[in-house]
Length: 114
Length: 109
Image (tube, rainbow over all chains, first blue to last red; front, top):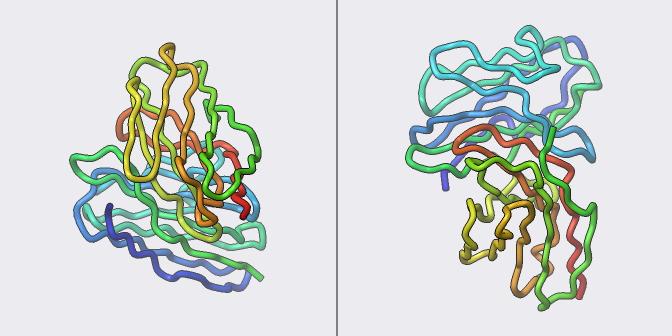
């Protein structure tokens, strides 16, 4: 499995502010994904982070609200912009390593917006 | 939308086998069946995957029917630590994982 480090692990933020979440992997990966898990719900895919180009967003998610960067094969960031209490969720990074098909997940960032 | 159907919850006695069913009647020929689980407050954990043959690893066994329209995840000797939400997902190669609502497995003493 890949070692995935997400930072911060949790945060409490004021509404209207933005938070950037980092995902660092211990080896090069082919695919990186960002998910959201609202309280008591399943995981929802936000976007696929593409290395060196714009992320591919799922229906219902837009770049202005969730800008994503992936400057290299081991690192990605997700920003939650202009936050509201409805953005309170766990945000998870997922990766697929070279030569493998299984996706592995970080431990997530627990975000509370007040 | 998720392409699988799972029962919302199941119970299992500790030490017994837990058999978790999954229906994926619209699965395509190039789609694999993946199983993940999520223990409370943790990121999902990969369990096993298969295309058409039965698979076994140190965690579980995966039984896929011959027509590939359904599968069963088997935890041979469930423990309390196996209490989690189990997700069955169909997926092409390294494509994105789309999660359904899963099965909440409760293992009791």
